[in-house]
Length: 95
Image 1 (tube, rainbow, N blue to C red):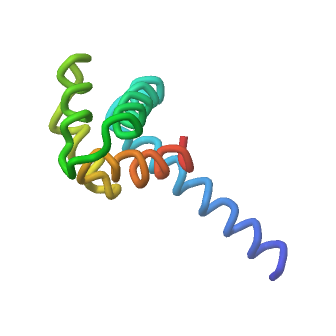
Image 2 (image 1 turned 180 degrees about the horizontal axis):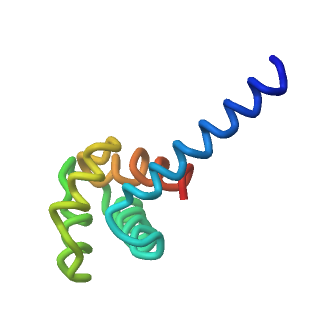
Image 3 (image 1 turned 90 degrees about the vertical axis):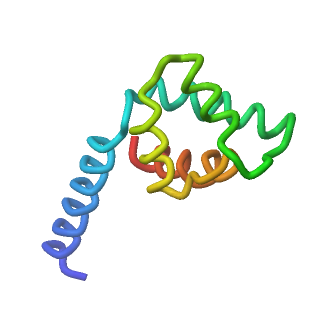
């Protein structure tokens, strides 16, 4: 691969990360708290294939439920264990 092609690819990847970050529904620190809470509860109580821990955290922290749940679903977070496995992974890769 030519260096100009590598530069184009690098710039494209950086732009994709910027776009992903801009789409986060809340600040990084808020998402980190959400993911920590959900992961801890899934580890200790398991996943019943719902968003019970996610919605509990959102409610307790008075966060925008609709935008958070839509963002999580768009990134594979359709239940608590998927929030931890998929959406958190997307966030980690792009923060």
